[in-house]
Length: 157
Image (cartoon, rainbow, N blue to C red):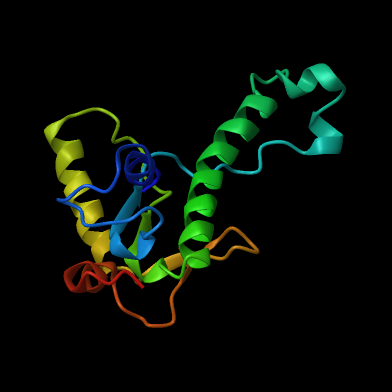
């Protein structure tokens, strides 16, 4: 969305898009989050982290500071986009499908590809969810429509 808006600002509206800058209600956005697992609570501040250097590397091989920044980066992208589409009254045009449970599918084997198809089919059957901006947790939307139904209608929420 930002790239298209930026292009429109710099180059002018594209005849093929028929969109003015900041007309986010004209976009249908599908965001797929399938890359990283939710991080478990690995570090107990007062017990495990003793001194400033332990934030860089722990005795058991952990890297608390790097882990925190990596997880925060992905979470902030989701949070930012959700905030923007809500502020612009365009959240019905935005669908985030998030799966934090993927494991062992980073190699392109036939079994892993088949498993990914099954995961995708399963995600389509789940209810549409959106991020709670106060808690940062994805919660089902009260409409009870599935991701598949939302995609077929072209209406995300």
